[in-house]
Length: 271
Image 1 (cartoon, rainbow, N blue to C red):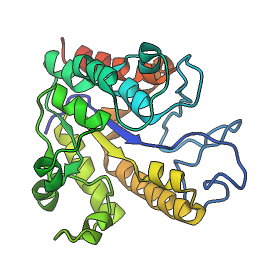
Image 2 (image 1 turned 60 degrees about the vertical axis):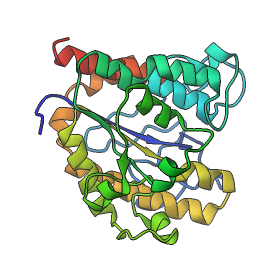
Image 3 (image 1 turned 180 degrees about the vertical axis):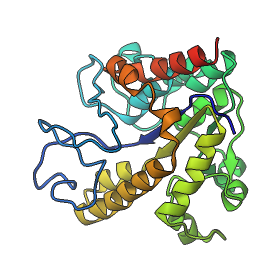
């Protein structure tokens, strides 16, 4: 277990800072801290953390989209500006080229920062029937020639599924035990403690947002908020929070996230 400063990047797809009102599932949702944040309202501090409203438009007209936004987060390159528009769904050839050359994992490997990992478990189907289109995260891992975690790792407490409860896997017929928010948080906190950089991706929020199912959205957000609280209580915040003010001050857009992480970890690593 390393004692050097570390970063856990917990990416929640489809979640932003919205206005209060009947269209916002966070409005009047109990036990939603620290995720329930609203426009024009001062965020309530949680464990002395800092909330930064981050620009996802990146100077490009139109609604921000997953493929270009995630590419930007995972590379530090303004992907919408590079390709001239926001791109939804999965990265296209141009975005994959940006990820191949600038993946945060690739940058950290080249800088000698390690160990680093992607905490999410992949199912056997991914390896047996590789999909035509892959996520920005998958491409970022492959750009650094890192290995993927599997369901075997999940069973051994060395990975976490994108549905941290494992319910989706169980519904698919996988021989996997369901996890509580506390159990899943314990696994992710352990992985984060063992690595200098850890990424965990959660995207059920994006799917439920597209479905426009308010009841399901409130249920998902309640579970996710609980998981987040359980996770934060298990992390050694002395390793993650010491430079929070300096890091928060430099992050203005999605393109600032990777440079802030890389600079912090390489400086501490003496690179």
